[in-house]
Amino acid sequence: MDKKKRTGKEKKLKRKEEIARHKSYEEAIKRAYLKGDHLADFPAFTEFNRNGISVTLESSRGSLLSSYMKEYIQNLLKINMEGPYGIEWHEEEKVKGREMVEENALYIFVRLNQQGNDQEVGTIISKEKNIQTLWKGTGAPVVAFVQYRFVMEEELPVLYVYEIQLEDTIQGKGLGKFLMQLLELIARKNNMMAVVLTVKKRNEGAMRFYLNKLSYKISSTSPSKVDPLEYADCTYEILCKVFDAQALLIFENPLSG
Image 1: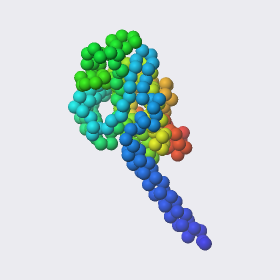
Image 2: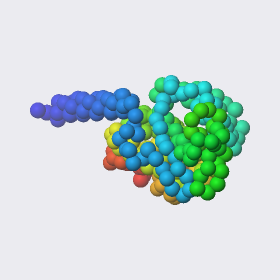
Image 3: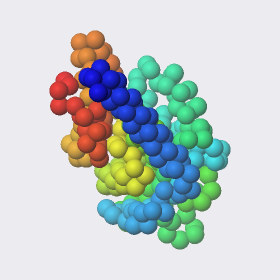
Image 4: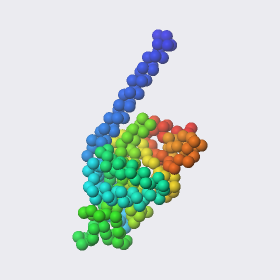
């Protein structure tokens, strides 16, 4: 076989392998969405009892949110994110409102464990102090939530963290780290190659949390890495933690930046 024919055959074989690989990635995402409750795979992560707070985790989807839950999400987002977004918040709030109820929006909600039946709605007695929450609905008060999705990013399957929001009264107690560890486990369990998220640069506390405490990296796909000069005014970074050699080449390319 001459070199030209051999090269053509190799290209066809390589293309066939790429198509099969891409199909397997899409099937992994479909399987992940077919699961009813990702928390069921990790019973040890359904509760968090540390540093003076006691909470229980529960799963949901964007299409199943109650009116109380929608209001809670919107209120907590506004409190936590209006500052980092600045003048961009007016438009971003609309985007987040649409994303909130989409079918492929997966949630983990965090509820305080009530001690006794005489607590007012929105108030809970912790080991440290009374914790006032934004929750206005029925049942134990919600104090935090995570929204995540299984998506293709740079043609690889990843778990993308859309939101991780905690009320200020329970921040700094290890719950945020606990939730991110859970998301990493969910990603691995469902054959995702990385956890990816976007963080506003001016949200310095969040940047320190991910980069210093959780060892996330600024992705080589982040604007500051793609072209620091062209995107000098970009207000966000894309962060990642990878679990696969192929994802490492894409998201943490040592030749970038």
